[in-house]
Amino acid sequence: MPQPDARSFAIATPHRLATQSGEAAFAAGGNAVDAALAAACALTVVYPHMCAVGGDVMALVHDGAAHAVNGSGRAPRAAPAGKYPVPRSVDAITVPGAVSAWQTMAERWGIRPLAAALKEAAELARGGVPIARSLAGALEDDQQVVTADAGLSKVFAPEGRLLGQSDRLVQEPLAGTLERLASAGAEDFYLGGTGRMLVAGLAGLGCALTMEDLALHRTDIEPALHRSVFGRDLLTMGANSQGFCLIQIMAGVERMRLDDPLGKQAPVLAALFRESMADRDALLADPAAMTVAVDALVADDRICELVDRARAGAAVRSEAWPAARGDTVGIVAVDDRLAVSLIQSVWDTFGAGVLEPSTGIICHNRGACFSPDPASPNAFGPSKRPLHTLMPLMAAAGDRPSWVAGTMGGHAQAQIHAQLLLRHVSGSDAYTAVASPRFVTGSLDTGGTEVYVEEDFQAALTAFATAGERTVALPIRSEAVGHAQAIAVAADGTLDAASDPRSDGRAVAR
Image (cartoon, rainbow, N blue to C red; front, side, top):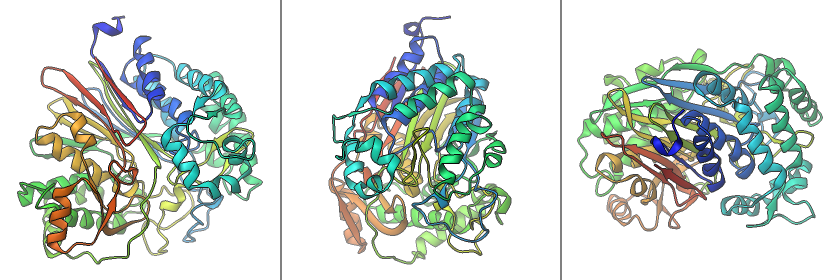
C-alpha cells in the first residue's frame, strides 16, 4: 500500500473537522471514497442543521466512468396520494437514504470498512465539538423550531439556553446510533434495532413511516447524466435530481454565445436560470411518474426552446421571499484513481424539526419537495421519490475529471454550479471560483424569480439595474447564495482544492 504522501489526493468540505476526518482516512491508506465517507459521517455530527443520519445522499463516483449514486428515499407506503404534507412536520418525513448510500459506496469502491468512519464520527459525537459559526446562526434563526421539539431542545438547549458559537455540542444518543451502525452495518438501520427505535419514536409523533418502508429501501447506481458543453463532458445525476438544469443552463450559455454572463449579460443568464427552473418545477419527479424523460430535457431541441424562452423573458415575476439558510453539505475528494462528489442534506434547516430522542437522529423533510398541485407528476403519493435538489457535479476531459464540485443551495444549486463552472472555464483557480460573489434567482428553499445578489458583485448589480431587474441585496459571502466545495484537476494531475469561505470548511490538496 503506497504511503499517503507518495500519492496525490485532495478533499474539501464545509467544516474543518470533517476535512480532517477525510484527510485521516487518506493517511490510513484509504481512497477518495473512504475519505468522502469519513467526512460525510463527521458532518452529521458537526453540521446537524444541514445533514444527518436521517437524511438523503446523492453522489457521483468516477472510476474511469461516471456512476450516479441515488440515495434518496421514498414517501411512506401509507402516505395519502395527492395530499401535500405540512412541510415542517413528521408528515414530510420520507425514508432516509444516507446510511444505505454510504454502505453501498463503501462496498463497491472503498478500501476501508464504513465502520471506521462511523466509529470516528461517534467519537466526535460523544466527546463533543465546538458549535460552528453556521450552526450557531441556524440555532439563533430557528430558535422556535428547536425549542418546539423535545429532542432538539435536549441536545441544542440542554440547560434551557440555546448553545452558541464555541459552546460544546455533545450528542450521546447519536454516538450510540453511530456505534451500533458500525457494529451491525447499514441493515441495522433498515432491518434492525436502530430502525425499530426510530420508527417507534416517530410513530409516537404521528409519522406514517414503518419498518416495511425502511426494509424496502434500495440505493440505485446508474450511469451519470451527461452532455458535452464547452469541450467538456458535464456529468451529474439524472431524475429525480435537478442535475439536468445545470446541463440546460450551460448548454444555453454556449448556444447563445454569451461572452460576459457574469457581467453585462447577467440578466440573460438569470433568464436561463428561470426557464430551467420552470422546466424542473413542471416536469421533474420520480422517474416512474415523469411525462418527459430526463434525457429529452437536455436534448438539442429542448435547449433551443429554453434559449427562445429566455430571450423572450417568458417567466412571470413573483413577490420576493426571505433569503434561505443552510440545508445541505457538499463533499469533494479526488485521488490518483477515483473522484467523488457527495451531497447530503436534511432539506430545511434541522429538517422536519424533529430529533428522535432514543437514537439522536434528526429527520429530514424531503416530502416538502413534492408539489402541492395534485395534478403534478411530482404530487405527493405512496412510495414515490420526490423532486430532489441534491446534484453532485463533475466535468471531464476524456476518462479523467477536470472539475469536481458540490454545493449547498437548495433550489439554486444548478445556478451556483453554473457560476462556479463559468469561472473555472474562464481560467479561475478553484478558490476564486468558489469565493467570488454570486447571484441566484429566487431563494434557496422556495425558488421564485426575484434576484438575490451579494453586494460586492458590482458587475451583476449594474447589469440588473440597467435591465430594470428587481434585486435583493445580500451581505458579502452570504449563505443565501450557498456554499460550495471544488477540486480542479490539471492535465498533469496537479490538484487544486478550495472550500467556500461562506462555510466553516477547509480544503487540502497534496
